Length: 426
Image (cartoon, rainbow, N blue to C red; front, side, top):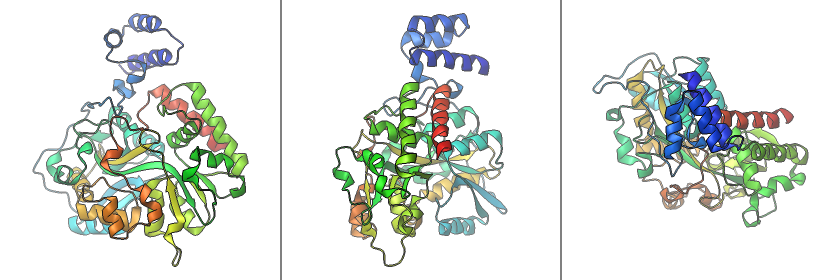
């Protein structure tokens, strides 16, 4: 079956990239005995860019997908496991240590975080079992289908997660990438844009004709510029710089063009590649960063040196539909030794007070919780006026939002190979 699926995906990728005509693709599918895929093509239900890992259709904001159930959910009414270690797989510095302590004390376990640097790394290590016995993992929508196809996750039993329906934005009760929220609950939501120290960078980036271009005009900030260490985000940023808004393209030329533009940054500004601007910007080691909104807020909430005015931190992101908006989420690992407790962890993070404390006391990434708004945060004087643009509302997402979504297996390989060229040159 896997061989057939791989062959089908390759044929479909050839159609998408223009190497095969529609007629040639259909003929190849039939010759290979893949009549079901051929039928979907003929009926218009799926095109070349619709099929991802495991034959799962590729979700888009305007094309929601209900994921297959590849494992069984736990039963209702079970007691939470006690004692020992509760294993969390996550980015570093992404959960308030005080929250970990509170959870550990509440449920009589030791919550321990194993870290990864990128979602690429996380999926690879989970799939290869390089990391074992993880109970929960942070994950992103563009890699969710791959994790489901690889049977890396357990479906959720939402009897254990009442805070999802109680506290979370309506869009995440049944998101486009996981219709029915079968596998995930949301953790954070954020835009991608440009962050800068306005005491060091003199341009008013938000008023530039093309704010992305500041990175290619940053010679005078050489050594103090960074790009996100993320294969999708970095290449997408280079595409947006050229006015290309299909952030899920699998066109090799567009991907190659983005790589060429990224490589120019090595000479222009000796660009750094990392995800740690939340610490380097407050310290003054970075002045200009391709950045997530949450990194800017985290810098202010948790890493500002005493006496430094938080209004020096500034952030721009494109309007809806012109720049990336994303959300991270939590899922229960198929390897969970404490699956009941894993569900309770998801519910714990969606508690209004826990979510608020985690956000404003440490990680800076906004949870999509109904009670947390820009107005309330400004009224509480939790964020400086210069970072109001880093706060989102439910209106910022929808069928016309610009999101980095799942790719076909060959398409994902193209993005990862292109990004590897950029990183190797740094």
